Image 1 (cartoon, helix red, strand yellow):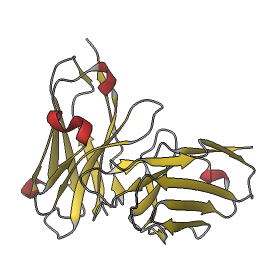
Image 2 (cartoon, chains in turn purple, cyan):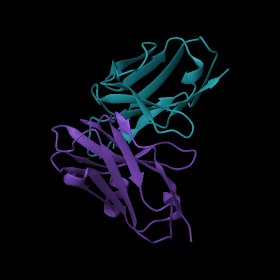
Image 3 (tube, helix red, strand yellow):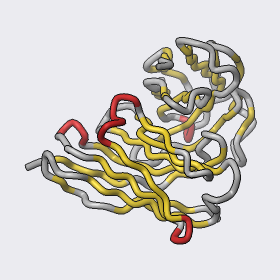
Image 4 (cartoon, chains in turn yellow, orange):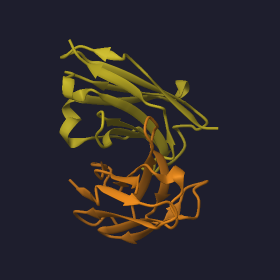
Length: 118
Length: 108
């Protein structure tokens, strides 16, 4: 059974750096073709892809947020970490991690709501 | 950047009726197109990938078609549990993975 769980702060202040951790089980990120992405969704709005890391440690970022994002993995811990710098109230959203093969996300975490407010 | 445009934004359908959702890409994505269903308070669920392949456990009433820039998700006979928001997503260009804006399927 595949599970993913996001963890991190529920509240961050403007200008702070957000660090989110995705802890997963049921698959290995060292398996060829496997990837994990972060996706966010502001309240009442559409899904927005943020970043992806694959089995080969290649990393891909949203063009509009590239300068603020860093994605990394710890294969031994089955974790993927996303950091986003210079948080702003417009970054308030539910943040999901999702896993799957070749860019197709079969598996999703339940999401974690991050509010940016002073 | 590949822009994904979904239409209509809202679709009102009676239970048992057919629903047809559209997704258009600003440039060709070949068949690298997925559909997701999202219900309130839940994470998205993969329905279709490769434009037309149903994911594991997805009922046969869901079908996808299209290639290049025009795609369709059809729900042949809407059940109560199908009222949700549906998103298309292209994965042809990993440098910029993009979702459409979503189509809300609501009860008529």
